[in-house]
Length: 208
Image 1: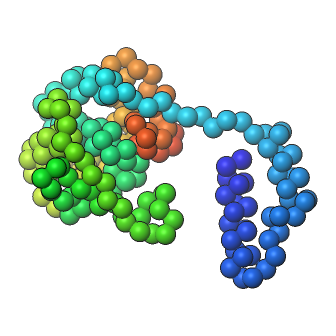
Image 2: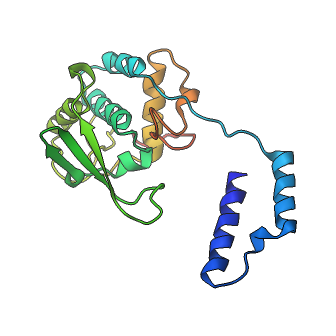
Image 3: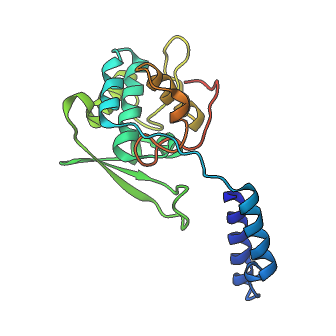
């Protein structure tokens, strides 16, 4: 249903741009869409959002390995900034600005930014155990990353690779980490850890 609704909006805009009558307003289209919605419409499955206490439990379960440090920074950043997984994937060292109050992350065009403008997301300092800035600094120091993608895949030997984590790999990491504290990973494969982290279901055997 959501896909059909988006298609109707696109058709409406295309006709409006050319000064043509809006076919979507016709009684035939409206009745047809209403009938499809009655026959096939169902609520979209919403993923659960992690609570602060659950995030603290996940962080406490992580060790000092390079992979654990990366995942700690990734999860805390996703939680603090309510980032989509695609946005986390696109964060570069050059996107980070340090201020007295914390960090400001510049995110290029996102799924919710239809005009193609960048947006800035402030990341404040947190309590020591779940401070996203402290976690990020530890990850950058241990990994030796000074430019380019911040969140990168690791090979089986724990060495940092050059590319950036994919959205599917980030979703996989979330699932793995929530499972370690006894939560059902299937409930956390959707939109967010808080308000917008980790888009859509899924995930895969991508390097992570």
